[in-house]
Length: 301
Image 1: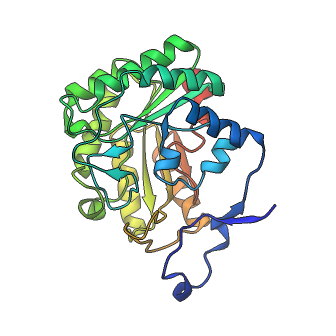
Image 2: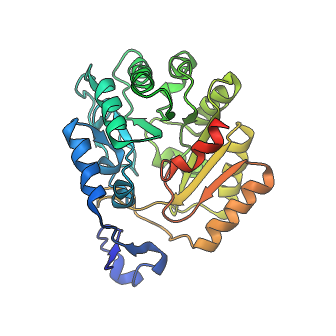
């Protein structure tokens, strides 16, 4: 197989030399890659795989899986790391999107369905009722699936959070994204402590089986800061913590400050486990929803 450099072009590449070997991988092949793409397009759906230029897209499509992006593909927040389009006035939610996502999940044969969303601060309920409707539609189409929701912070409004949680997703996910010191520069509107409060509220509700969050590394954080964030997430009640390498999706986004070695990722994983975090998933290609189905058997036991 040929090798694929999954990092986007960067004018600093020549100055830093070649990208590290662990950030090169084989290009997957097979008809399933095209089948997944055609099914997603058939139902006119958005995926975070495409919109955020995820480096794992080809691999996941080959496995006939994708992370659905609900409520359109324009976000009302313009975070420095994310390549999803920004708009203060996105299009209104599509009323048939829940049924289209459900039909796509059935046709893909998914057993664990991951649904994420753009931030919709323009809507009265910030999209919470729409996400709840998607969960109901997916469960109606296939009652046997497990569901993972990756939501916005709903501006810290726990009443809106509960609209989603009352659908009892097996996994509730909301990402911390970065360490405390870097959060104001990297995240637009979202706040470090607000994220922790949302995660804590989800855990205290006892409605989802698992509460999950994640960090992207390589933005200039120190090892001590990463460990502090792992402790904070553990204290907030997270059952699953993911750590992955930040990659610059376009020239307008924040640049990578450091490529984290696999051994350092491993040490963070071991640190979290030593604290008592039930599930740590840490590595260069790890993303919040990457291989999320691996946790599904644990969820339903």
